[in-house]
Image (cartoon, rainbow, N blue to C red; front, side, top):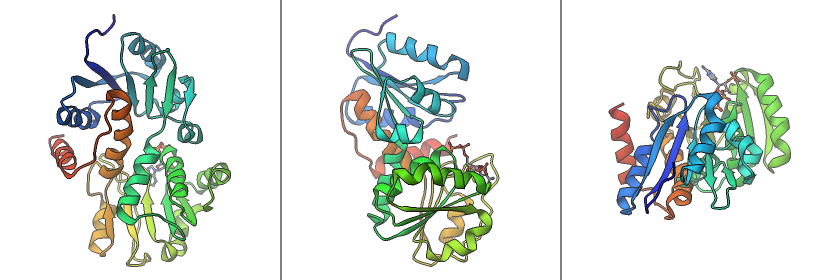
Length: 285
Ligand code: ATR
């Protein structure tokens, strides 16, 4: 099978995939730019991942966005990768080049960077507390490092994982990394200019993050990478305490922009109209 004609087709692969907002996101930009194309959601089991990627490439897809649980497999399968994918050991974008090369990128890091920059500019001299020590935290450390953060304090439910991540990431960023468990929150919070949740706590179906924001200084910003629900318990608490709160939609929209450009050849804009469309999609489950 091969796709003919001018239509440009890309995919988003994951398991499950039903709740992915990527088709809505790309669909919005395709309509905005009058492009004949589509981003197709594909539910692919872990064991079928590599075979499917090869088939999609043969079929003429431009590439795929990759979500849970395939991000590490996507990185492993690619022939070339960018700095962010290499540092994270994971990719959320595979681009199928005309010569058969598969290029892996990690645009989650760019998405977070852009979202933080929009809210507070660069982070030179600033201190950040980052919750979590998984794949999302890896990308976040790189993003914060790029923005010039002076200090990044990693806190994780299992403190040993935060320490391991600190050791792995310190050579890759200029920011001074430190690590601990949630019991260290009270000590770390007062110095923080920004608190980021990169854990999956607070996501629909998961318990909320058990964190009291009282020790945070009033000027600190709170960012949650979770976008479903849009207003997590953490962000609710932050707003109630007068902090500026940033939800996960900014990161989601900004990580999608480089994918759209790679698939469809146009650099799209992140606008209030797109945000409104995604909020509508979230409301309709
Ligand atoms: P991802 O690649 O999305 O970061 P992951 O690698 O599975 O996913 O990591 C999930 C992160 O969320 C981990 O830091 C995990 O903490 P542990 O390492 O201690 O398991 C964190 N996490 C998940 N549920 C949590 C909860 N209810 N409270 C606090 N942290 C949680």
